[in-house]
Image 1: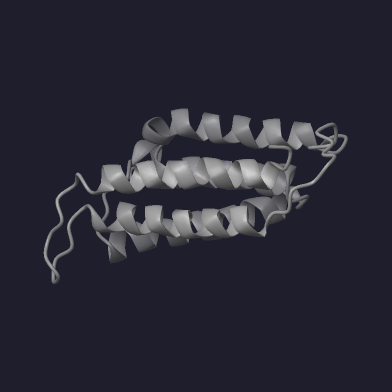
Image 2: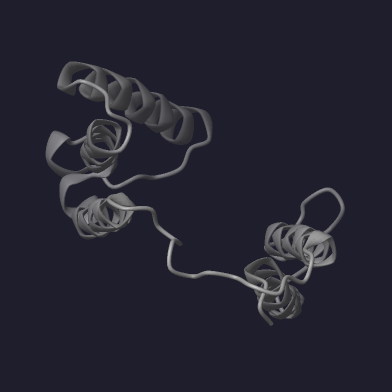
Length: 150
């Protein structure tokens, strides 16, 4: 296949089929209380539909150049984002949800979003505290407390 959209579509059709098959192994639950099978199955089916659309809408092309997948300088942004995510992954349990998400978002806003340091910290603070309040207080999800103990 010379068209990357066709290749991606085919890959994700297979991936979503595998995800759906694995989701069917989980307990179903009832109509009033859905079990753990429901959400992964819905995600798998959604991915399957979107993958079929991607595959069907892509046109075979004669020439595809893979030389400019990332324009000049963009590879550093990709590496920056990956490094920020890996750092937050390792810090999540140690320093807690709020601090790790705040640091991750501040780094991303500053490095990728081209915001000032003050804007980056302000936006990251608003988003991380809103996420904390939503998950912990509204939904009752236990989050790692870390150094700030909240």
